[in-house]
Image: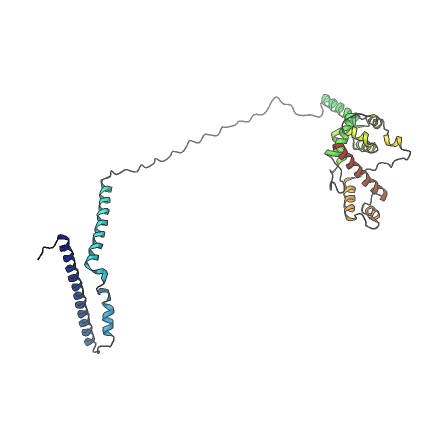
Length: 315
């Protein structure tokens, strides 16, 4: 009979130990079964009741927790125990290292001191002693104001127009303060004649009169004037004549001033009664009570001609 090797001896030892452990688990299970059954019988006798039919089933259900299972065998118990021991050793080593580390005291930040608030400067108010009150009884200032008013009145009361003023009037009436024009500009500049008169330092009557004269210039002369060039027509306009009236035998219609309200009424009527409407101009004239039918037609022609000249001047 040969001697067993060391590993063979270990295998035999584990097998025998496993079988013995398995039998011991069943023995413990059976022992608990007997104890519970005996206790159940005693309680039944105390209550003077017979043994029910389902008592055995209840015992098995109560002992199901203690029933031996495959995972409760000795090799599996040893494997689980070794794994738990290894985890416990690792945790113990970490705890030991943590205990050996020097404790670092947490630095408590010092409370910040509030910044000193600068004191607001104290202002002292003094009464000015070197100023004089404005008085309208000063004869020197009154004479100065009167002379300035006289110069302004002289310039605004029908003074002759220079070429620069005529050029500026064309620019103001077509670009800066355009009129209300149907289909092109829905709303014009309110009080445009007063605005142009204020810029040119003239009265509104002088501006409207000169604008009416400029409407009768020829296209070529108007373009020259719009580009700032002097021509014979400029001299005629300055002297109160019109190039178109001199070359035409038929007298032109007098210039009629239109207010902003009348212009808006005309624009609204033109939009309300488009081309093709029956008695169109009669209805438009009825919408503008202060103007006649011929004046409304002439106004539309003037606006169309003004737009055409403006486009020609830009090109």
